[in-house]
Length: 566
Image (cartoon, rainbow, N blue to C red; front, side, top):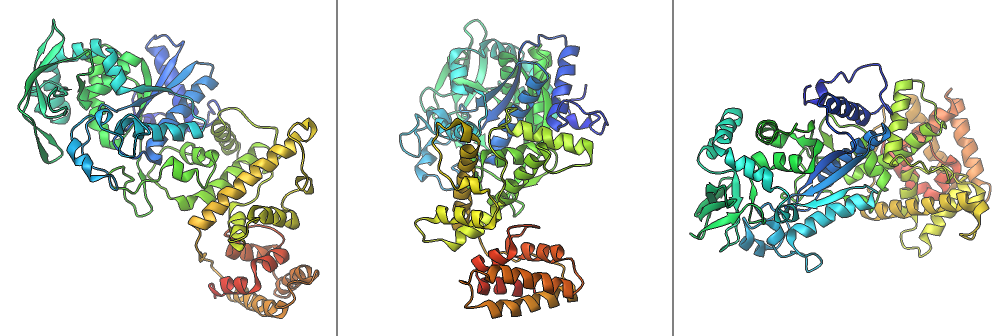
């Protein structure tokens, strides 16, 4: 069976599992494991966690999607576990943007042997970086089993695999040259000892494998990181393969851990395609272990089209996202689809927050979807975003995120800011009057309202943070005809007439009536004129009662926002 999942007949009419790409990949895994006649009591999936720089959403995406496939396997009745494997034995190759300059003294040193550059909150550089990604997974409710490369090597878990690989180094060197054109391993062993004198990787060149002692002899002379030459200290020594005194080269390391940890699935980025090809061969031919099913994913790019990179400093971390959006919005971003390059920015959060509400409304049949396959897929993604545990306790009351952002911008310096936003939502009728009551946590009969109100207040806080840090006056591009422009000009004139009357009780209702009249006088359905106004004011197709909202937003401000389109 092909290892490129895209070659699988994804266009089939048949709905598999919950109708998502996660279910389709899980189905391929199941059929492949049956064909290989392997024990399926536990199906492990793996994600490698980089430990060389600040982990970003792309790094987290690999682990989250593997977790999603694990969920899809569980949904089919199979026990499955995500193994999050930290590559914390890798040597530091360069100093990431914004990191302290003293790290230049640790180039080529394993990141698990470098002091924490951010204080003493973690035992090492590698532990700090891995910890940040694990924190993002924890905050998002992802279940995983953590494996540290340093601990795995030190425990001897990979000893048998390393032994088999080094015994077959000549055969392996020829195959690497044949597969990817790299001739390096015709002359050196695919193992990087850590020099016991200077503590560096990549400069201690492995020369001979002593099979009986299970040790590698080495000379610490010179190595390369990219195009840069790294000098060794000249020391000659021996490194045990069982005690963490070195690590395998990437061209063979994946295969060793797949075999040792019984991994059945792992995705990869296109930047390591060559390594995956070699590792697959090593798995099958050297270690006699069927290599995992793979799935190739595209990279995340920033809005400028540049690859999001730990070293370049343009990262969006899970922690950054979760300052402004819910874990559900982040999981939706990662679960929606797998194919194609993704441009991502913190500016996407309002849309993702509202899109999750849409998925929820479809799931609970508040919004009807006529295409049954699409409806099944939306409901399936919603269930995976919720870890297959659907909350039926709270009322599904949705307030558009951008409305909350705009409301937050009206009360920047108010100490009771959250209360004022909440009261506005009551005033507009967006939330039920039952929310305007305080209940005890122990009041079982009111638990649904209590939970729903908590969720709303959390969303208000997130949107307020976004308003303070990221909001800007955004000009929405609208294709307006001459009649529509005339209507907007007429509305601007009407707004002038209401200045000084904002405090009058009937003003919002009277303004609403005038908007109706402007639309009808021009032969337009009022709801279509309202849609134009909502597009201008909150970048959405619908919103709160327009008369009240314009009064609260401010007549002058609304006039200015309309004029941007005229």
